[in-house]
Amino acid sequence: MIKLRLPLILLFITAKLFGQQAINDNRTYQANIKSVEFYNTAKEQSFPAINLKSTDALLLAFDDLHGGTQYYNYTIQHCDADWNPSQLSPAEYLQSFTEDRITDYRYSTNTRQKYTHYELTLPNQNISPKLSGNYLLKVYLNGDVNQIVLTRRFYVVESKVSIGATIVPSNNNALRQSNQKINFQVNYGGLLVQNPNTDIRALVLQNGRTDKSKLNTAPSNLRGSLLIYNDVNTNDFEGGNEFRHFDLRSLKLNSERIGRIYRDTANTVILLGDPNRNQPAYSFQYDNDGKFYILNQDGSNPRIDADYAHIYFSLAGNKSDNDGAAYIVGQFNNYQLDQQSRMLFDSAKGRFYTDLFLKQGVYDYEYIWVDKNSKAPDEIAFEGSYYETENDYQILVYFCRPGTRYQELVGYTQLNTTKR
Image (tube, helix red, strand yellow):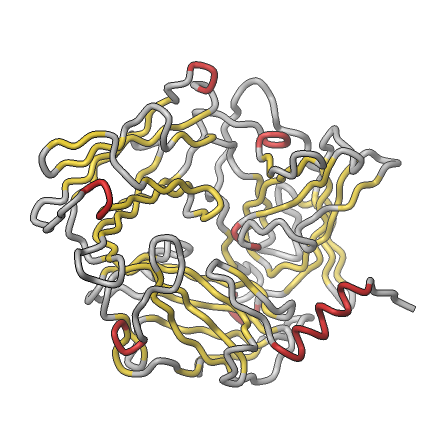
């Protein structure tokens, strides 16, 4: 008999009775919802930003492992720069309807794991934003907003400022070999700005990650309409390391990181063991900055003929569960540190291990350590941090126009450490 701890039972009952409260972040709330992708259609897995009143589009795609046909509805919520709901009614920021149903779905074919694949393109004829800013996409079941399925952040830009940026080593001598500092300027030109120190805010993200971002509430210097953000202590990011990766485009042939593949009633894949990479010197390896791509060399349409497999990971972390906990994260699980991403510890082998149920494709991932005492996530413990690491950085500029009740997104740019 399987025994559940009382808090888990209560959590399950509460969720059933009252639904789940959506968190204004990238989250998946149901275990049967897998392989969620959300990106600008101009490039697969790109940052989910579009220009207002343009032909830009976003694609949401996900699988429901329950199969069959479900009634999934969606809406979008306008938010401020801190991702709190803005003080606007849906009629003020949405054209046409306030909610709609996802009608594009297909059933999986020739797969051991049966699923239904759903897709949604935004904006569309039924729902389209008419203001710039931060938006939260909410998908829920049977038209009931309490039965939340997933949430995804996206950005609608109306370019009114110009942004120039550079990436330099940290001003702190102790961090020059490990950190990447972003210095940038914002020229607000024709914008009617009364107080640049309060009306304009700028957000910097590393690889589009909300858990690795820095919000600039005031510039370090002003020069006419030019706002300069180059204070010695701001926008200083750990460079981290290139992501680890594995290639599961085929379940018939072993790729570089695949140890064994077993195909029976379910697919099982054993990856080669991972070492601790916190070494003195940087070592280059190609990565996708934490992203994942659904691909299947054995089929013709990976959206519906890529199969799922139990992927087994193991890490020689030179630590034990007496000191803290190890987690495995990537864009595939929104970098969430939770029970699903937490690894178990094998004291006999001195290794951390876990298995994840993932769809065929190419995946980036990394390991995070959380010390028992500090409770602080530590990326460096297993991965190291190096100035040479290739990373993307996104800069978003927000403007609160005097007399308005929301923050406009008036500027966006992306830069890469290898294109300095």
